[in-house]
Length: 225
Length: 225
Image 1 (cartoon, chains in turn orange, purple):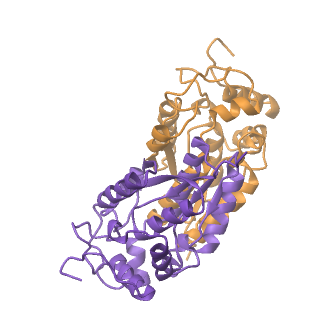
Image 2 (cartoon, helix red, strand yellow):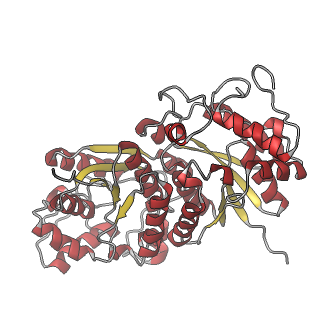
Image 3 (cartoon, each protein chain N blue to C red):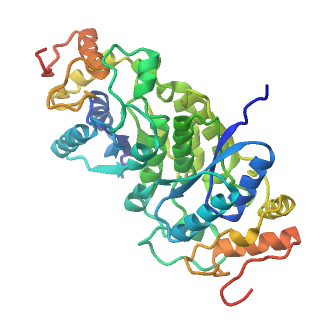
C-alpha cells in the first residue's frame, strides 16, 4: 500500500512566483489543484489566460473563483476604475495605493473553504520575502495567524503552506531554473498591455530577480529589454 | 474636543444575534456600517430583505458583498442546488451537511478588507456559544487566530470584536430585550418560506433561546406556534 499524495490547492496567478511553486509542489509529490482569483484588477484577464495555459500544458486542474465583490466594493488603484498606476519605484505610499486591502486574507480564506469543499488537505501560496516591506498580508506574522485560523476553522484542519515567505524573488528564479520552469510563459506586469511594460513596479521586481539570480531574463519587454 | 466614535463594520444578517449586536454596539457608542453577505444560500434573499429593513429603520448604512463564488464553487446543502435540508435536530453529521466550509473565515476576511477600504477601525461578528459544538469557525480558537490575522494583515490593524462568542443564544435574547430590540422584525429560518417554518435547526434554536431567556417568543411560525 502506498500513502495517497497530499492534495494541495495552490493559489495560482500565472505569475513567476506561483508558477515556480507549482513546479516545486509537484516535484515534492503533491497532487495539485490550481485556483485563480478573478478579483477585478487591470492585469487580471491576461494573468488568468496565462494561468490557464500553464495549467493545461502541465495537466493540472485549474479553477477560477469570481471575487468580483472586491472590485465592486473596495477602493484601490489596482482595480478597474481606480486612478492611474504609480509608475515609480515602489515606496510605501504608492504601494499602499495599489494594494487591495487584505487581499491575501480574502484569497486564503476563499481557498481554505474551496479546499475543504473538494476534500483537499492543504492550501499553498507563493508570497515571498520581497513582499515583506510593503504588504502587511504577505508577512510571516499574518501568515502564522492565518494558518492557525485555517487549521482551527475547518473540520479537516486545512494546512497553509507558504514555503517562500522568507525567500527573495531572486531565490525563487534560481529555484525555478533548477526545476525547469519556462519563465517566458509567466506573466507579472500590472499595466495590462500585450507585452510586459518593463517599467511598472512588478516588472522592475521581475527584472531585478533575474539579475539577483545571475540568470538571463527571457521576458520580452515593450520597448526592448 | 471629543474623541471620534469608533467606526465598526458589523457582519449583519438580519437575524436575531446580529440585530442584538447592532443595538449593543450603538448602545456602546460605536458608529456602525452594516455589511450583509449574499453567498447564495436558500434563505439569503429573505434574510437580506429583513436586514435592509432593520437598517433603514435604524438609520444605519447597509452594504451587501456579493459572495456568489461560494455558491458557484463550493459544495453545501445550505446552498441553492444542494440536497434537501435535514429537518432533524442538529447533530454533527447533519450540521456538517449544512455548513458552508470556512464561511466565517471568508466573511471576516472580506469584512476586514472592506473595513480597511472605508477607513473603519473594527469588524464585529455575532457568533455565539451555541455555535461552538457544531461549526469550527464559530469557536474562540478560530476567532483568536483570525483576530491576529486581521490585525497583522491590515495597515490599520483592524480589530475583531466577537463579544458573544462565550454567550448562549438565550443570553443574547435577554440582552436584546434590555436594549429594546423588536425580535419580530428579525429572521432566522433556513427553509426560505414566507413565515418561519418552526422546525428547521435554526428555528428550533430560536424557540429554545426565548424559553431559556424566560421571555415570550413573538415569532409567527408556519402551522402556529
